[in-house]
Image (cartoon, rainbow, N blue to C red; front, side, top):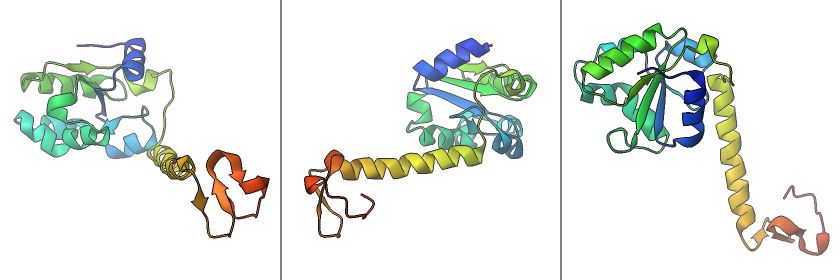
Length: 167
Protein backbone atom coordinates (compact mmCIF):
# COMPACT_ATOMS: atom_id res chain seq x y z
CA UNK A 1 0.00 0.00 0.00
CA UNK A 2 1.12 3.55 -0.69
CA UNK A 3 1.31 6.46 1.75
CA UNK A 4 1.79 10.14 1.07
CA UNK A 5 4.05 12.43 3.11
CA UNK A 6 1.21 13.84 5.22
CA UNK A 7 -0.02 10.34 6.14
CA UNK A 8 3.50 9.28 7.10
CA UNK A 9 4.04 12.43 9.17
CA UNK A 10 0.75 11.75 11.00
CA UNK A 11 1.77 8.14 11.67
CA UNK A 12 5.16 9.30 12.98
CA UNK A 13 3.42 11.65 15.40
CA UNK A 14 0.64 9.32 16.53
CA UNK A 15 1.60 5.65 16.14
CA UNK A 16 4.30 4.55 18.58
CA UNK A 17 4.14 1.04 17.13
CA UNK A 18 4.94 2.03 13.56
CA UNK A 19 8.26 0.69 12.34
CA UNK A 20 9.95 3.03 9.84
CA UNK A 21 12.62 1.41 7.67
CA UNK A 22 14.96 3.16 5.24
CA UNK A 23 15.82 0.55 2.58
CA UNK A 24 18.72 2.49 1.04
CA UNK A 25 22.37 1.49 1.50
CA UNK A 26 24.04 2.24 4.83
CA UNK A 27 26.10 5.12 3.40
CA UNK A 28 22.96 6.80 2.06
CA UNK A 29 21.19 6.26 5.40
CA UNK A 30 24.11 7.70 7.37
CA UNK A 31 24.19 10.81 5.15
CA UNK A 32 20.54 11.63 5.93
CA UNK A 33 17.31 9.89 6.90
CA UNK A 34 13.93 10.51 8.51
CA UNK A 35 14.37 10.80 12.30
CA UNK A 36 13.57 7.54 14.06
CA UNK A 37 14.08 5.34 11.01
CA UNK A 38 16.05 2.14 11.08
CA UNK A 39 18.08 0.86 8.15
CA UNK A 40 17.84 -2.44 6.27
CA UNK A 41 18.84 -2.35 2.62
CA UNK A 42 16.49 -3.53 -0.10
CA UNK A 43 19.07 -6.16 -1.08
CA UNK A 44 18.99 -7.62 2.44
CA UNK A 45 15.19 -7.67 2.34
CA UNK A 46 14.81 -9.36 -1.06
CA UNK A 47 17.52 -11.90 -0.23
CA UNK A 48 15.27 -13.27 2.53
CA UNK A 49 13.27 -16.27 1.37
CA UNK A 50 11.03 -16.49 4.45
CA UNK A 51 9.65 -14.00 6.96
CA UNK A 52 11.75 -15.14 9.94
CA UNK A 53 14.90 -14.28 7.99
CA UNK A 54 13.78 -10.64 7.75
CA UNK A 55 13.74 -10.46 11.53
CA UNK A 56 17.08 -12.17 11.86
CA UNK A 57 18.70 -9.90 9.27
CA UNK A 58 17.64 -6.60 10.74
CA UNK A 59 13.96 -5.91 11.30
CA UNK A 60 14.08 -7.33 14.85
CA UNK A 61 17.00 -5.04 15.71
CA UNK A 62 15.15 -2.01 14.34
CA UNK A 63 12.06 -2.92 16.37
CA UNK A 64 14.11 -3.61 19.49
CA UNK A 65 15.74 -0.20 19.13
CA UNK A 66 12.28 1.29 19.53
CA UNK A 67 11.54 -0.93 22.55
CA UNK A 68 9.26 -3.24 20.55
CA UNK A 69 9.10 -6.85 19.50
CA UNK A 70 8.53 -7.03 15.75
CA UNK A 71 6.14 -9.97 15.83
CA UNK A 72 4.01 -8.67 18.69
CA UNK A 73 4.10 -4.90 18.67
CA UNK A 74 4.61 -3.46 15.20
CA UNK A 75 1.27 -2.20 13.97
CA UNK A 76 2.61 -1.22 10.56
CA UNK A 77 5.93 -1.29 8.78
CA UNK A 78 6.64 1.70 6.54
CA UNK A 79 9.46 1.46 4.02
CA UNK A 80 11.04 4.30 2.10
CA UNK A 81 14.00 4.85 -0.22
CA UNK A 82 15.26 7.87 -2.16
CA UNK A 83 12.71 7.90 -4.99
CA UNK A 84 10.34 5.15 -3.84
CA UNK A 85 11.38 2.45 -6.31
CA UNK A 86 13.56 0.37 -3.98
CA UNK A 87 11.01 0.61 -1.18
CA UNK A 88 8.23 -0.48 -3.57
CA UNK A 89 10.32 -3.53 -4.49
CA UNK A 90 10.94 -4.31 -0.82
CA UNK A 91 7.22 -3.91 -0.01
CA UNK A 92 6.23 -6.31 -2.78
CA UNK A 93 8.71 -8.88 -1.51
CA UNK A 94 7.55 -8.56 2.10
CA UNK A 95 3.91 -8.91 1.01
CA UNK A 96 4.85 -12.08 -0.90
CA UNK A 97 6.22 -13.43 2.40
CA UNK A 98 2.90 -12.79 4.13
CA UNK A 99 3.34 -9.33 5.66
CA UNK A 100 0.01 -7.49 5.54
CA UNK A 101 0.82 -4.19 7.26
CA UNK A 102 3.58 -2.99 4.95
CA UNK A 103 3.41 0.47 3.40
CA UNK A 104 5.53 2.23 0.81
CA UNK A 105 6.21 5.90 1.54
CA UNK A 106 7.28 8.48 -1.02
CA UNK A 107 11.00 8.88 -1.45
CA UNK A 108 13.29 10.87 0.79
CA UNK A 109 14.19 13.11 -2.16
CA UNK A 110 10.75 14.73 -1.87
CA UNK A 111 10.41 14.51 1.95
CA UNK A 112 9.42 18.04 3.07
CA UNK A 113 10.21 17.56 6.76
CA UNK A 114 13.34 17.17 8.88
CA UNK A 115 16.16 14.85 7.80
CA UNK A 116 19.01 13.90 10.16
CA UNK A 117 22.36 12.22 9.73
CA UNK A 118 23.31 9.20 11.81
CA UNK A 119 25.94 11.32 13.60
CA UNK A 120 23.36 13.99 14.49
CA UNK A 121 20.93 11.37 15.76
CA UNK A 122 23.66 9.75 17.89
CA UNK A 123 24.60 13.15 19.37
CA UNK A 124 20.97 13.84 20.30
CA UNK A 125 20.62 10.38 21.87
CA UNK A 126 23.81 10.93 23.89
CA UNK A 127 22.59 14.34 25.07
CA UNK A 128 19.22 12.90 26.05
CA UNK A 129 20.90 10.08 27.94
CA UNK A 130 23.10 12.57 29.77
CA UNK A 131 20.15 14.87 30.52
CA UNK A 132 18.21 11.85 31.74
CA UNK A 133 21.01 11.09 34.19
CA UNK A 134 21.00 14.71 35.38
CA UNK A 135 17.21 14.73 35.65
CA UNK A 136 17.29 11.48 37.61
CA UNK A 137 19.93 12.95 39.88
CA UNK A 138 17.95 16.15 40.36
CA UNK A 139 14.74 14.28 41.08
CA UNK A 140 16.15 13.06 44.38
CA UNK A 141 15.51 14.89 47.65
CA UNK A 142 19.13 15.89 48.01
CA UNK A 143 22.49 15.02 46.58
CA UNK A 144 25.91 15.14 48.21
CA UNK A 145 28.18 16.18 45.36
CA UNK A 146 31.30 15.92 47.51
CA UNK A 147 31.84 19.66 47.75
CA UNK A 148 30.67 19.76 51.35
CA UNK A 149 27.38 21.46 50.55
CA UNK A 150 23.96 19.84 50.39
CA UNK A 151 22.43 20.02 46.92
CA UNK A 152 18.63 20.15 46.53
CA UNK A 153 17.48 19.37 42.97
CA UNK A 154 15.64 22.30 41.48
CA UNK A 155 16.36 24.72 44.35
CA UNK A 156 20.17 24.84 44.11
CA UNK A 157 22.46 24.57 47.08
CA UNK A 158 21.17 25.16 50.59
CA UNK A 159 20.64 28.83 51.31
CA UNK A 160 21.31 29.64 47.64
CA UNK A 161 25.05 29.03 48.00
CA UNK A 162 26.84 28.31 44.71
CA UNK A 163 30.15 26.65 45.47
CA UNK A 164 31.14 26.22 41.80
CA UNK A 165 30.81 22.43 41.81
CA UNK A 166 28.71 22.63 38.60
CA UNK A 167 25.56 21.20 40.14
